[in-house]
Length: 186
Ligand code: GRF
Image 1 (cartoon, rainbow, N blue to C red):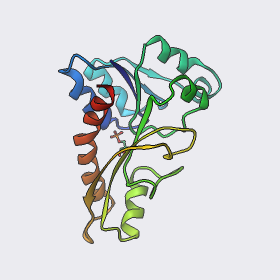
Image 2 (image 1 turned 180 degrees about the vertical axis):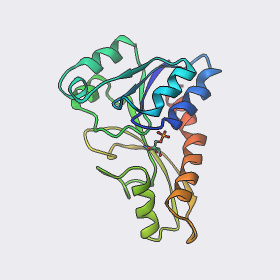
Image 3 (image 1 turned 90 degrees about the horizontal axis):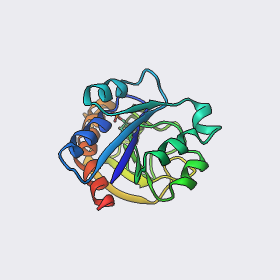
C-alpha cells in the first residue's frame, strides 16, 4: 500500500509515520506534499530520503495538478498531518474516503477554521477542560467535520499551559497515528 503525507509545518508527525513504516514493507510513504516552501518538513524529507513536493494555491485549488500527481503515484491513502488548507472538492472526489486528518483536540469541540496548534490548547486551558486529546477523522469539504475514526484522551490539570498540553497531545499523536493508518490499510 502507498500513502502520501500532507504537512504545512514542522512535520514531526510526518517523520514519525515515515519512521514507523520504514521497517514495514507492506506500507510505503511514497511522498510528502507541502504548501509551504520553508516548511521544516522538507528538511526532514531530505534527511529521510523521502520525495517531497511543494505546491502553491493555484496548483492546489485552481488546477488538477495535485490530483494528477497523486494519481500518478498510485496512492491508497492521503494523510494530513499538520496541513492547514481546506481540501478542494476535486481532490475529495478523486480520493473518496481516502483522505484522513489528525486534529489535536477531541472533535467536535475545538475544531474548525483557524483552530490549530497552540490556539487549540489555549482554548482548552481557558475553558478549564479536565481532558483533551486527538481526533483522527475522514476529510470532507469542511474543516474538521468528517466521520471520526479514532480518538485518544489525556488529562489537563490546572498547572498545564498551552505548551504542556501540546506536549501531551503530541505524545498521543506519535503513539496512535501510525497504528490507525496501518489498521485502515490492512
Ligand atoms: C499536530 O498537532 C497535528 O495534530 C495538527 O498539527 C500539528 C502538526 O504538527 N494537525 P507536526 O507538523 O506534525 O509537528
